[in-house]
Each structure stands twice: as structure tokens, then as C-alpha cells.
Length: 294
Image 1: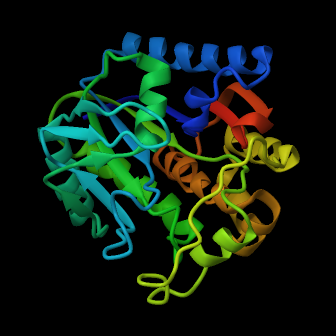
Image 2 (image 1 turned 90 degrees about the horizontal axis):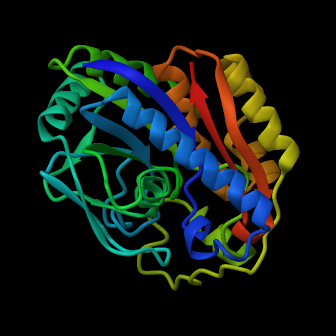
């Protein structure tokens, strides 16, 4: 397979469910960037879009938390979370099978599902970029939700190995998209701390549920520093200055999702990128950005 495009973007369901709550100029800038990404992907004529998202505990609950998992069924069922509609998205099954085998050969012990289900981290970017005319995808979920999480450097390494698996696969064209982040705080302090409890102490404990406030804090300085590193092709250097604790403190528990951007940086070998849009939209509780890798 030939990689004919690479992008990273935010994925909050609030981008759609609270579209009218955001300031019009910010909303329009983000929507225009998603439309631009969609048009560019269509123009590249890929056979499939390899989409790297996460799971928010609906697909892989605490009974089995997968660090990396790929869907290899014929379709992926969008579960309709985050106030998004349920949907069915086609999977390029032969590409998914080849990537699964290739990643295992590369030393990445991917979990896989023969009954693929996806949440808003996949569905929201697809809707914003393509409406309801979905391309075939290969869905890969990275654990960005329930600690312990993959180390940031591992997310980068997996991107390197994903590229090798794609290039060793059958003839065809793919675009790769990583989704998540940027800075955002999900839930109140009690809810955040519950997620940070040690593995083995959460299942069966009384969960405090989830609160989504009308607005939320955003660390715009962090977002712009991270975007600058991605666009300059210095993501690897950025990682040497950050660990999970600093990321959590400075950019929020939701910022753990930048792992999917980091995986794209590894896949592209830190190619430079350009920002398609960035807006600190407090009504979406998320620093919202998109980049296109050269």
C-alpha cells in the first residue's frame, strides 16, 4: 500500500452536538478545515482511510482494555455516543487484515475485533469531513482513556511500525488520519481521579459518572507549542520534555489523545506539517485543531 496523505485532527463530539453554541467565526473556521481535509482526501483517491482514534470506555470497557486494537470486520458500527447518530461505516477488510498481520510481524501485539464498533473519535471526524458519504476505513483504536496508557514514545514507535506494515501490504492507496486532543479536561475532579486509580481497582467500584459542563478550560499556549512542534517536524524532541503527569497537569486528561497525533508523526518520520485550523473553543471544551502532513 502507498501512503498518499496524512492528517491529524481533534474529534470531540461537541463539535457537532454543540455546533450552534460556538462563536460562528470559530465554528466556521474549523468546519472549513474539515471540509478542506475531506476534499483533499477525496482528491488523493485512496482505497481506504486508516483512522487512528481512541475509545472512551464504550467499546473496550474495564473488562478488557486494549492498548492498540484494529477492526477487521466488513463494517464498523458507529455506536451513537456523544449525541451523534448511529451509523455503519465500511471497512477495507483486506487492508485491515494485512495491517494486522504486518503489525504483529513488526512486534506490535495488536488486539483485533471481528465485530468492529467505533465511537465518536472516529465518527465525528468522518461526519465533518465527508458528511454521510463515508470512505472505506481501517479503524485502529489506541488507549488514550484508562491508565496505564502507552508511553508517548511507544505511540511514536507504533507509528513507525504502522508505516512499515502498510508499505509491506498489498497494492493500493491509503490516507492515514490520527484523531484526538488537543488540551481539554474531561469531567470534574472526582471523575478524573477515578480514571487515574490503579488498574484493578475501578471495575465494580462506584463510578462517579460523567459531567459535561457548558464551557471548559483550554491551554492555548500548550496547544500552539504542540502544533508548532508537529509542524516543524520536531515531535520527537517535544516528547523528551513531556511526560504523562505534566501533560495531565498542564493540558488536561483529554490531552492524552495527542498520542494519536504522535503516532502520525512516527508514521511520517516527523515530516513537517501545516495547520489547517486551530481554535480554542471553550463551548466545545477543547482546543480544536487540524494539520496536514507534507
